Image (cartoon, rainbow, N blue to C red; front, side):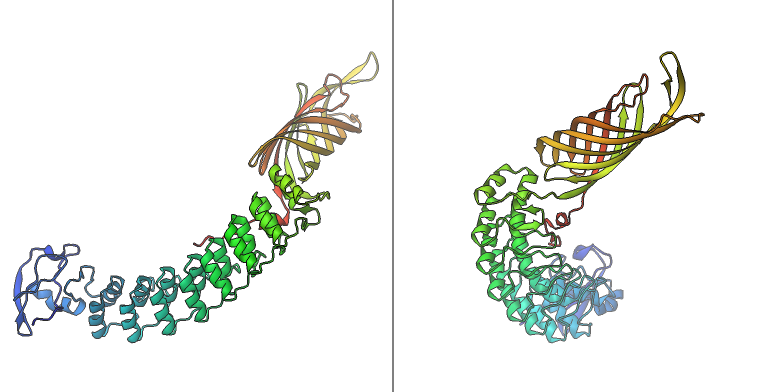
Length: 513
């Protein structure tokens, strides 16, 4: 009976031509039997004769590659047996691997990315090859350039048996990859409950975090993997385990509106009153996301609907600020109370153009905004870019002409009234009262216009989109200069920066998945 698997010399002389290449040939007798290689590029056909192409290179190729019946080894590279071993593991060719290893090829041969045969076999879940490689001494804790160990590779691809074999063979269950993620974090994020249980039973640390302190339960909560979260909680994971920013799994469910996950966490003892570093608790995050169902669930589970975020803000304040009338009604209907303290929320700064048909001034304005009552306090400076001709009246019959430079320093208090809001776009009406001090000089003269204090009422319209605003106002500015009208227009371009610490902690992002 002829052997089932025949080991022969490969016969390629040019890359990519495969077994269909037409070449000169010779007959070769091996072990007293004759076989033949057919022209089918994917298999070896048993017969009475072996035909070897290019006999002059036969000995070199025999040392570098092997061919197994029913196995395509056209990817082999002559002179690089370690590459051939790695690729054989990638393609699941156990007999090729055995022959190469028997010929002394290094069992942990690595690619240029430091990937070993065991890593390929692990991510493929090929336990037959894994057992052979491990039995021959393959390192179960070797790592490539991205630190994805064989165990992490097996877990990510949901190969339970491969992960179990590696753990039994001494794999480090808490090894981390380049993103500081463990096998358990991967299992939690991909929702592999069986592998999650296996890893925990093998000693995986459920409370270890990635570089941001995110734990395995957080991964499950972020991707709404309820089954895996249930396993973690039953095994003793902390339902309130937080990251470096104070986020808990319950806050993450509030961010995404995952009711079932929130119910599971609350049922296992999660505390809805915990606040992150921005002062936000789970209910506040649910309010910001207009989630009535979660707000109600949190209230039923012991959350305080009037719990402050800071001294001047609670959940009702957030709903009012966002213009969510339905949420405002819901919260008030469930006992929410107004927090009437002022909250300075933004720094604002911009360019001002103040003009009419007789005069033009340019300057800047900077100050702060209060978003609860839509008020602002600013200070500004205006100047004429060039002197203009003015008349200075001495008496009823005598006037002098001068070239005047003019400056104005002002402090303004204003209030915005929102007329229309959609997303971050806001359009409205505003009023403001300005106290100003003005002074100037006459070019080429020791005389000057003299300083004055002014009160300047004004009103106008504004448009705002998140960090940018434009306003156009009427302003009464009585400079009392002959032939220069007191009725003026003001065009402002303003930028805003919200410096409230809580704005940095409104949501958590886990973006490696």
